[in-house]
Image: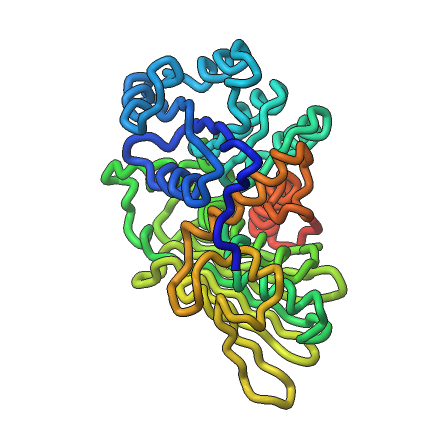
Amino acid sequence: MVESRAQSSGRRLRAAMVGGGQGAFIGAVHRLAQRLDGDIELVAGAMHADPEIAVASALELGIAEDRAHRTWMDLLEDEKKRPEDERIDFVTIVTPNFLHAPIALAFVQAGINVVCDKPLCLTEAEAAELVAAREASGVVFAVTYNYTGYPMVREARARIASGEIGQVRRVFVEYHQGWLATRLEDSGQQQASWRTDPSKAGVGGAVGDIGSHAENLVSFVTGLEIESVLAECHSFLGRPIDDDTQVMFRMTGDVRGTLTASQICIGDLNGLALRVHGDRGSLYWGQENPNHLTLKSLDGPDQVLHRGADYLSPAAADVTRIPAGHPEAFIEAFANVYRGVVQAVRAGEHNPEKYAYPGVEAGAAGVKFIHRVVQSSAEGCRKSI
């Protein structure tokens, strides 16, 4: 178990945040995760679409007045002018989806490392442009698929890679919520309003918001790529984008899978769960009980593996902070993604595999998945990815 993530030989990295100001849930999550290991200091921000709220939000967080910016453009121009020993090491983008691409592209082209919330952007063209820009600039670019940061998700990945359940045959992944079971957006609730608006959220509703997490989790844990999808997207409440989607997919090696993403399941809170079946065994992990991983074998009894145990792989042990029996969950998983980003930035190397963070490439794959699912549903046929 790693007791401290802070590297005594390295200073704390300087971060800026775009979005995530007053009233924003996910911005606060990112800030908590950044602080957890003592490796990151938030020094600048442009934290709201309203310039006055943006400044007030930054000042409330203790950001200096000269780095509390009214717009993200002001933030970027200020950073360009600063000497290197004052400049930020990376920017975190936690705005509504439609703003991800222009902001990320501008910072990448300025040579500044980027951490962007998911989905990466609205269109495949934007995704390709961001991947190309990152390659040209050489910056580190992470996308916060935070569920990859859970220790027992890392353990599941290691167990499959070692061949413990044999050759993967079948995958089931679900992500069910109930918070949009009524037309919450009609009340003016901010999160519901933009997440159900295709001009701000993109072509996918539930499939873009939470289905993209499910898609990424499947690929991360199995190490396989989704090759084609046959999907049905539906809105039970007459929304312009889906609030419920089901997908049958095929992966590398003729693996078959089923994905459901729904935000109208009354009583479900954050029900992300994954089952992977091989020819020698199976495994199960659920986000609402994330410190356990269940293994089932062809001949032996079921096993429940516990986070923090000595028998786990280095991949899980390296992202475990506290002893077994003490719950470790959502914030820590985000912090594990940031841990990889910190290592990559300090090394000056964009290498998602080496430093265990989801890269812009995974974000681009997610955007393609969303679009192929929506196209498959509209055309009533299987679509290759």
